[in-house]
Length: 534
Image (cartoon, rainbow, N blue to C red):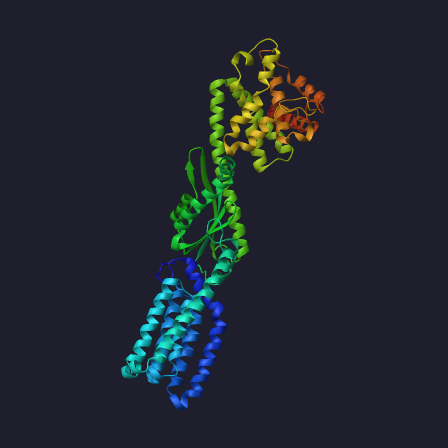
């Protein structure tokens, strides 16, 4: 919606609509009383008063209809008030000017302005009313007005008193209302106001005049809070909220739903440039921190006609966007880590690739899927990243490691986890890597976890890593044949390894080795048949 002097902000505009709802009954009663007074007074004042009554009634009906449908309700309200003022001024002029019994009624339009608008508009309405009173009295009978000004002075005093009282009551009510619908930290509308707005705009939103609902969630705010403390976090929220409100501007309304969640309602079919402006506003980069935001969007009523479903859809899309961003960042970080591993030790990269391949099959057999499966595979690829910090002399030592060397080697899961946790997208992967050398019986390292204390993903990686290590040639010994390695897994199931993971690994290994044999047999069968026929 476009800005106007009457209502420069969307909050001012909603105040006009809300005020109309609150004073509708008062207007009905007041208009009814004035109508009755006009009918009773008609024999003495003149039957022309009935014309004023009809025009006033039509104005009343028209304003109620147009306020609900107009994109600029403040203009509808002001036009109706000015028309009422014109009718009353006409009645005053026709019924005696300064001696008119209708003169005090000219206070009513100014009171209606005070009940709806901001102070600047109220002052303008007050000045205009004073001018109308002067014109309706001096213009009709200047001599009577000057020699007998009591009625005019009393009306002006009544005008100031009524407007002051109405404005004071309205300000107190608005203060209480603002406390209920505004976020105290940022000054943005809150969740309660969003719910009210969704209900109120639902009947007005059409495919031709849609409303876009945007949900935002800050990325990196928790880390910022932990680093700079809650006062620093509050200052950040205040800064970006101000920028967010400016980005939305007159195109809609900005909300803070709590914590690091924000929302916007945008009028009309807003383009992607508007969305980008909101994302930029809800981002900030500085020394030691980076705040970005994820979002979800729903177009009303095109995509749904249910406000609650709209909120749910926007929320789901926001988290899907967040996950996709994390996945993209995670892939880039993972590729970088693997490149580092390849440069440092090519054999470690080949080893990790074989471990990851086996890990995927075992993880699927144990029911892992979606994000859990992706994290497990990535952990298998990166489980040895901490070895880049271990001297090559230790990694390639042909004989047994001494105590100091062994203690150094046991640090590589912790080092790897520290490296990976520096990237938020790999935080879950880092925890899997940290526990990838824990034993089922608690005799592993670095923390001595046991059984269910060890993440399932870590138990899977440990079994697959151990198998690949056993069948690979190592500086400290010869490689085992696969049958020996499988026997070792069976023997250590329940002590070193999770027995369920071992069973899943054996099933996966069997499936991998029987499938090629079956394919080979099926391929050779036709050839045997041809040979026999020849």
